[in-house]
Image (cartoon, rainbow, N blue to C red; front, top):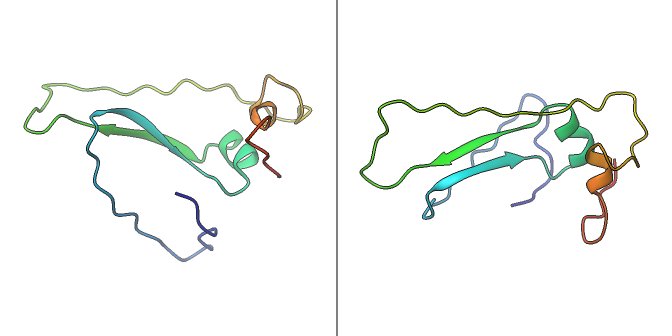
Length: 88
């Protein structure tokens, strides 16, 4: 889903049905190469219906790309190729 940015002090609630169990991620689509670099993303775990794990942990590993050339392939700016034509 992509929409206009939620302004400071405002909110927006997403409602959807998560049919497919698995581990996913959410992230910004508004200035995504800049916002994801700064941490605007997180895990989204969809569990199988009726199953509850005794103990569950989610780890996110990330590399900070601060003060680097945004066209360098080693940071998020490098993902903006092909069909992902992002503008920051």
